[in-house]
Image 1: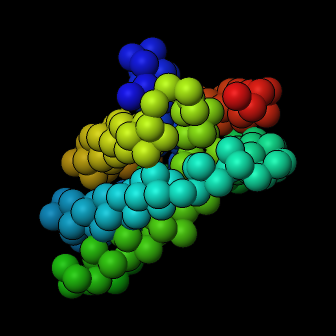
Image 2 (image 1 turned 180 degrees about the horizontal axis):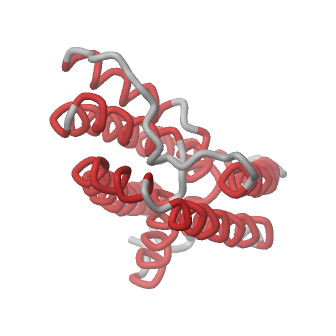
Length: 210
């Protein structure tokens, strides 16, 4: 079982990641605004299934493989840092869009909403990065079962992400309306997100392998 300070540290990183713009946020916001909160929450269940898929894959061998294969972890770590810098640039570049700017979507049935939420999360590079490059930093091979540590950290990430995303679904319309009438707040939101992403990128790039 990871120590308390590792769980808190990973929880804070998970919070930073879920608050940064990405496919999940854009999809959930657009779906909630275009089709209502119910559709947003159904889509969120699909996103949750995607989190569970990644957690199980990591716990059942991917994380252990990274410890065993020379240079694999460092390759993912540096590649992940570069990807976070790319996301930071996308957040602050001139003409970049806010995740709370509405993308029109056709209405879908419940099954399709769930499937689209699942696929959006499954194909989200940010989540793959979180489980393949960030999560191994918080696992101590000498600290007990890697499987238990992986599941513990994964459950922390899922709880944090679902809590934040549920709030986003609930207030998406209000936030979109607020930002649409206040362009200065859109700029502030972009720079905050960009700063968080740069900080995560530097932490990832400078983190030494355990």
